[in-house]
Amino acid sequence: MCLFLISVLANSVRPPYRPKNLLNQIHFIGIRSLFVIILTAIFAGMVLALQGYYTLTRFGAEGLLGPAVALSIIRELGPVLSGLMVTGRAGSALAAELGIMRIREQIDALEVMGIAPLQFLIAPRIIAGLIALPILTVIFDVIGILGGYLIAVQLLEMSSGVYFSGIESAVVMRDIVTGLIKSVGFGLIITWVCTYKGYYAKRGAEGVSQATTSAVVLSSVFILICDYFITSILL
Amino acid sequence: MSQTSFQDISQAKQDAIPLPLGERLVRNGCVSPAQLEQALEAQSKEGHKETLIGKTLIELGYITHPALLNCLFHQLTRERVAYHLDRQAQTIIRFENVEKSLDGRKVLDNLNLEIPANKITAIIGISGGGKSVTLKHMVGLMKPDKGEVWVGDQPLGRLSTRKLNHVRRRFSMLFQEGALFDSLNVTDNVAFPLRETTRLHEEEILRRVELCLQEVNLVGMGNKYPDELSGGMRKRAALARALVTQPEIILLDEPTAGLDPIIENSIHYLICDTFMRTRYTTVFISHAVPAIFDWCHHVVVLHRGRVLASGPSLEIRNSSDPTIKQFISGDLDGPIQVI
Ligand SMILES: Nc1ncnc2c1ncn2[C@@H]1O[C@H](COP(=O)(O)OP(=O)(O)OP(=O)(O)O)[C@@H](O)[C@H]1O
Ligand SMILES: [Mg+2]
Image (cartoon, rainbow over the protein chains, first blue to last red):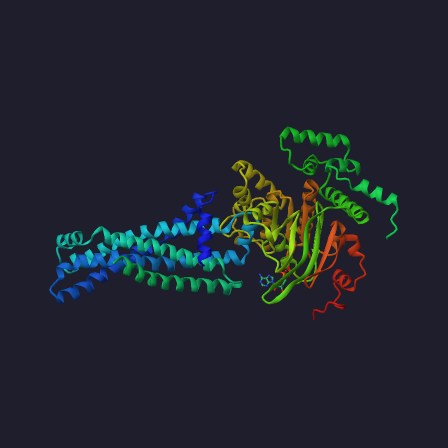
């Protein structure tokens, strides 16, 4: 698997470059995931605010609701949930698409034409993941915090000044960078695992379905494991 | 059969000299020299050099399509005889003791094979005999467990990826299942190899694609997607994609399987016509026995991963080997037991 990644990276720096391919993939992985990301972000933010409020009132610290919501979203939930949602939506599709190309000999056809499939098919997908995931995560963060705001200010009748000024003073650059590093890592994991599984799919429809399932499971698990390690290193 | 006189050979050679189709037609008395002159003139006016002279003659009403076809096949039939009498051809692809196991089963078993350059070679044999696997070895899609595959003077197994890609650009291949890209429509599929591996202008590419689609009878299907086509149409689209790059070696895995007899014939015509124009090496797998014996130069019979026979098509057709005889005649009774 590491060998696969290395040769993809080696292939991706070699001409010819195909920017149109890359844009298509960014569209597929990024833009088409936007809707799920927004939906998840709103509700994640809302539920965090509810739970946070319930917990914080016990300690009489409900004024800290803003920072609590923002920090957990920016440092943890934003990257992780975006990663998991993209795995479910785009990762599975990546694995299935490549798996079908494999079993229908379309990848072989590319090779016969003298076109390197790693360069043509895999590299743009992995690069698109590296670009799309951080952007999606930022969007998730913003929407999530607004979702928290909805609950805090509209439902729980906190003042919006308290909510936002708390966030402003508590969140530092380091938190944001940590979140972004995670999202880049997750972008790599998703596209790497899913393209690998699809690219080496076994024959038959069963091979493709197996590849898709294990791609989703494996990349979800990897995301959570890596999340722990990145957190413990960067904390 | 073995006593061929010198005269036979020289006559056959005379017949087999590759002439331009136009001159061949004149020589066979299908059109008059004046008519050919006129067709050539019409062509030069339009400035389309690659337009087939046959097509122009048909448009001018000097010859009918079947007559043209006849002439083509007739020519190949003669060449086939010449090749039979005097097998002179360089080898372009050579298998040397190739062994290959897939899923623990030996699919190719000590295979030795030679494909003559600039000839039409047919590979026949029973289903599951390893024909497709053999074809995949020719372009290095599968690597032999033992032995070596040579293309010209290049050993495929020992080439770097870059050199291998270089060799592969000399080939084009039609896969048994077509292998069209699902995400592209027919025009884009056929244009794909031109767009990705050449620096032609988009206009030129589209012109060639249009010509190719005309040849395989898919005009107006350009913006359909592969899953909207029938099996036969997919096959023809894939054939167009294989022919559009005008490669030096053309590999076709069952170009006519699953097609109706008329389309099958027209595909055979297309293969012959392409060959006559370019003289490029053509290798194809087919179950269309005995029709192919009439115009293929060379036939290879694969059986259980080995070459059972390989030689000029006349020789194979008249073979006394019971297995080959049974295969050609389609008898249930014989050394090959299927039920
Ligand atoms: N990728 C593969 N993995 C495992 N086994 C394979 C693979 N490709 C082919 N085989 C096996 O190799 C044998 C020969 O297959 P091949 O496709 O070459 O047959 P064929 O002569 O082309 O038959 P047909 O005329 O039906 O196309 C078959 O038994 C098949 O099961
Ligand atoms: Mg086959």
